[in-house]
Image (cartoon, rainbow, N blue to C red; front, side, top):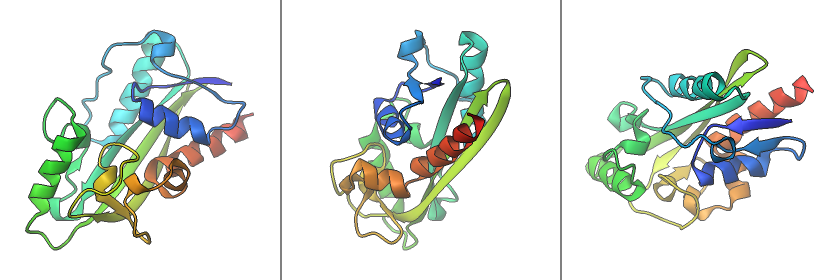
Length: 192
């Protein structure tokens, strides 16, 4: 089975491809000739995932899935949430985003947060959504060099490592995207 993952983020493609069984071939947006920015104008994480998947199906005709992820921080009433990638501006710079978040949490004692990923799948004319959540805390400084985005400042519950200190396999096992992808895989396996 070939399916499009509606992203241009090579880190996401690497993470998801590592989890997929061999019989599922993942195509990137570049593989299908899609180089435009897909709109993400929904006020919710789930809405953005559905919007991206729908865009690919409508404009390119491929069955596909898309994800959207947000970091939701308790002390900031769920922010940055749907704006996680561009929290510090439209340049979507991870270091700038982390600096802004750490500055906003400087005086806060509650550093609880969660990553939430929603994957929207359009397959055979049907739309399904799969959600993965990973609870944790925001560290006071960056740790590690693996991963991307907020990984250097997010420590998942039950671990003394930041996501950026974990191997891809460890992160996929406990992480938000890994959990959502596993639900997607379970669904695709039932469709065979």
